[in-house]
Image (cartoon, rainbow, N blue to C red):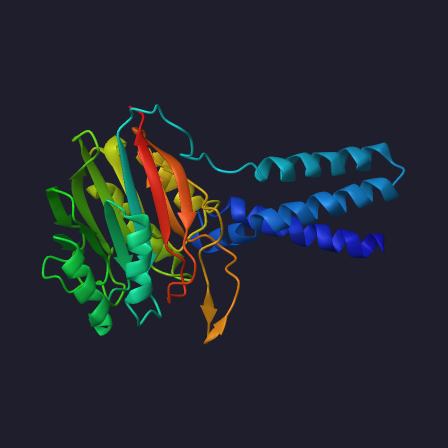
Length: 309
């Protein structure tokens, strides 16, 4: 039994160790998807092994393992909090439309949430009914490419202070960053920059890093910027944590996982949050909630934000 526990402990520590190297080796960053269960497993097995041994030196070693695993479970910094009643506010929303074919669930969701600005990923020309409905509802749209042939798009009915495509090149074949930016006014009339981004999927982790580097070079006034999108990373991944820290953003956990709702035509329970809201230092997330099934394999997310700076 002790030998089996040791093997299990080594495997769990391997997951934790690989995750810590994810900052330098992008492929290893995928181990951070399993960081929490790996840390829990390491703690439980280390406790059992400490109980089974009579040597204090080994007990101390297992105690160190328990402490390290517990430390690694500390969540990343969050933008969640509350603001004064009279603080400026704005509501943003995001949905990856992969698999969606009917616009009505999207319309009902938008009617319920009434975001000031909403971003979509995978809004291809193949879902023309949804594109038509959105164009009728929102006066302003900004695609990630200047010619509009891009599936990452921002919409708003608010007065538009500015907008820019942030992509250059072949977006649809995932050869460059897929992102767009809009500037709208918050409830006090001050400008807020909103970026919608859709990063490459695993296992193309190096490509994700390159896209984040491109995005970082395009950031302006990050304190007054909110970023939304399908980043194809969880909050504990080193790539996302390093980007957020280096750019002055904070991530926020949603009320439940956002992907996948469907797999090969079968309904499943989402187990990871890969759709995110990142808030600049002048903004705080008062609430971040996810939608029910809207016909996509992702949940939509909606964030109520308030100005703190």
